[in-house]
Length: 397
Image (cartoon, rainbow, N blue to C red; front, side, top):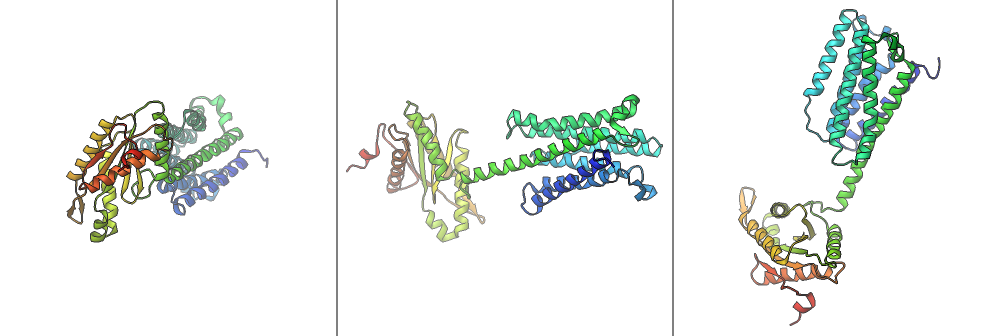
């Protein structure tokens, strides 16, 4: 047996499919990474393995199964693969197009087998697999727009398109191009070059899918290092980095502001209703604040019940109006905790990003001082820095 005959190459493909099935199964069940998509992909790889291994072993199957089980398993594997990729790319799980292609290909394959036209049955199977591969390529293209660069997306699409062209070319050759048939099939089996192409393209597709998952996992870890785990607001480190960027722009004359706020009587909520109610209050507060922010604004948690909103390209007067709107919205939106409304309010301090403060420490300290002034004046209100105010001057007696 040659090391490069179709049967040997497809056995290598089967071994790779088995490895990928285990990889996706571990991702789904052990690490819980994209569990539904990973489980679909694991099932897809497992379904294709018998079709690859049993190229010359149809005699092992009962007579009633001969002629269609191998093709049916191939179609099932490609169908599950298309569904898994759609799920992985976080697209809406519409299955009508995938189900229609798989169903029509299966009916055409069974009709070809029933009428004794093995070439037509194999052509229907190849056409169905090719169309399912095109649907998967479309989903990778659509779903990758949000997270992948154009170059990476094109690179990932290439093996899908080549595999689809190969499968559709095989289908056409079986039906209408008898002189080209040896390039695609030898008898009822794949030719050696087709087996080579299938092995290389499925390797590329499998590695690409794992690469997408690993990239998303890295992005998720990076995202989590910059976020507060409870509220999903920026943590203090990430907020400081954003503030430094605004301060650098303030040095060049751009106008930015920040709003610091602290929830009034937050300890009373924790003591009276428990820490779960306190967490719910913070989540409710963040929801109210975000409803009154622009896309370019940034919300961060300084610690405890204290938050900061960065307002790029905003004058002090406009920042004051934003803080007032937030204060009133929080006052009008009590937290419903165990069917009881809990009134929430906060004290706000509004300050500009000052020049000569590259780290933003003085701007932040000024806004924080204004928060405590608002609390001393009765809470549930805003205090705004006077134009040109600096922390050293406002702290003088």
